Image (cartoon, rainbow, N blue to C red; front, side, top):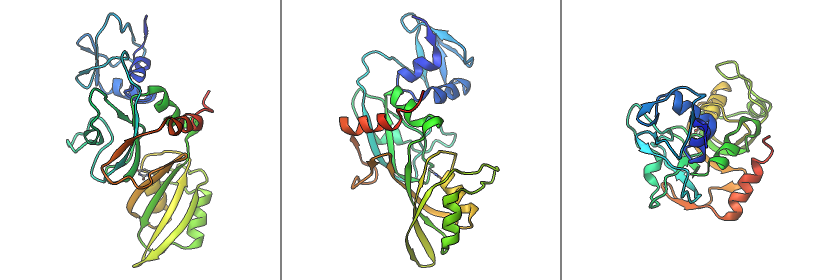
Length: 244
Ligand code: URA
């Protein structure tokens, strides 16, 4: 049966539909040997061969698998990197299963990253209509004042004019002239925490994501991952449930 190419790719676990549209526009997808950049393209997976990034994809025989990884700094989460830097998927080794990151973490950011081949879960967790809360631990330059914390919490204007929605900020400690804060945001603009901290004059020195929704990084070591329990997956699905 025919379906839209981006919908099929999402069903194969490649990423959210939106992310798959980007992949199509970037020329990473081919159908029967021809690169397809047209978003409206319909395909018939029973009759055609679909390739993503040079590998054949299939929605059949997919065992849905979701893991959380403690991403080390120095890994990219995007599937193609012009500098050839290490990719987080190289840290996952589950025979016969190919997983894709849910959303992005910057190259230098560490911490909690969910990877899955469940396109529906990815769609729910990354849809802008319902961003689940994400908690970051940030070491920032300088001593932050309570007034600056209030500004971060109320929303700040970023370098491109975007005003952030309310966040929660907790001062963890101040040491050696720098501050450690925990910040919870409910949206996911590019480099958002780094840009927010900069907007109040305290550039981020180190950034780590420690929680998404109910899911906490806990004692998972850097570079290690574990398969999520059914309960954890249900909680994530619930968190993304409000999407129409
Ligand atoms: N905010 C950032 O600035 N970077 C990340 O990787 C995640 C959130």
